[in-house]
Image (cartoon, rainbow, N blue to C red; front, side):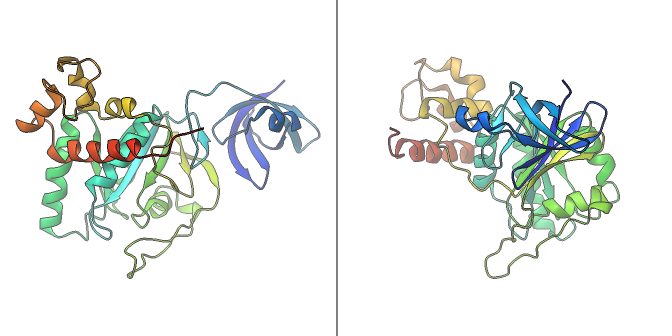
Length: 294
């Protein structure tokens, strides 16, 4: 039976790119619903042809990871798109995105946009802040929509990988895709001056062939909560803390108030950014205050 990958899902239909490069419209098997299985964009599947243009998905292959909102599977990396201005760059939101993305086993790449409209002060602040993220292993790209070097800048990061775009509304995610693939003509939303954020413009999830890889255009991350993360797990998603946790006096150290905490020592010496630890503690409190699951 032929196999392929779900590239798009709309109104209960799945569009599967088959081994022979055809895009086939498919339905899911009724038994999937009984088993609690929902095929996702990015899934590798087995299909049975019902006719010339229709088919049924009979099997969803094992996933290496998945996201719930947006619903997508088998992602290699997330391009976290943040604007330097309009809206202003937020380290708190960046750290929230990084924790959520790390928890899904997805490699983040930080992309700063709108450097062409940012003032020198804003550029210096953004560069100073992201220098730390580079130092702990994250790739950081700074560009602007319409940058003639945008394609060669992003191509090495996108080639051979499946990438999901994520980031604050109004930062230019759809416009960035328009620049990479002009024929898409994706509808873009203007920033609301009153709210300081953009309008959601993408309504479905779709994998697009870009720069030798696949890029997921999605309605965005509608939820950035930590419902799937336990408080003992959060520390593992702050990479610089996870790297020094073995130096803590207590094996189960939460880097909170425990004596002999290597993380707190490195925060005091400046080796770990103070804001990273502050945000970690805020997220930890959020998880601790979460209502118990039943």
